[in-house]
Length: 205
Image 1: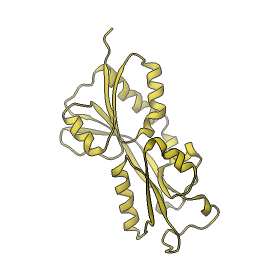
Image 2: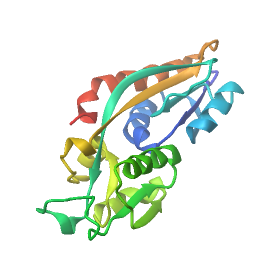
Image 3: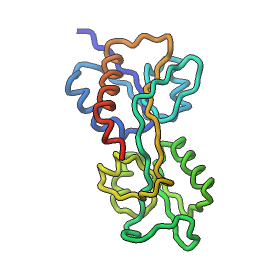
C-alpha cells in the first residue's frame, strides 16, 4: 500500500494536541512531516513546497498564498494568584507585572507587547517558556499571560474580564493557490477545519 505524507506546519502546538491524536486514530497509515514555525517561515516553506498547508493565527500575506479563515478565538489576560479577589489596575505603577510568554510564538508575543505599550502598561519582568513546558508554569499562576480562552479552560485559569483586555483573533488554514493537496493532506486539512468549526464555542467566551 502506498503511504502519503502529510506536510504541514502550525504556529503553536496547542492546536494539535487533541486534533492530531484523533486524526491518527482515524488515519493510522499516513506519514507525517510537521513543523511548529513562525508565520514568516510558513510563507517560505509553502512557496518552496516543503509544506503543503498551515494552521496559523495571523494572515499569511503573499499573492501566491490563500488564507482561509476558519473561526475566531478569544484571547484573554490571566493574572497571578496573589491578585485573586482584588481589583486589578494594570496601569498602577506599584503593581509588579511579571509576564509569561511562549518562546515559540514570536509574532503573538510582539503583537501583545505592542498592545501593552499602546495602553501605556509597563512590563517589569518577561519570562519565556517552550510550549512543552508552558502549561506547567502557567498552572503555578505566578505571572500575567495572554492566552486563548480555550487554554484557560484547559488549565482552569481565571482571567481579567474587562473587555479592554479581551481580544479576538482569527484562525486560518493556508495553502498555495495553485496547489492540489494529496489525499493525506486533503484529509488532514478537512479534519482540522471540521474540528474547529464543530468546537468553535470552546474558543469563545
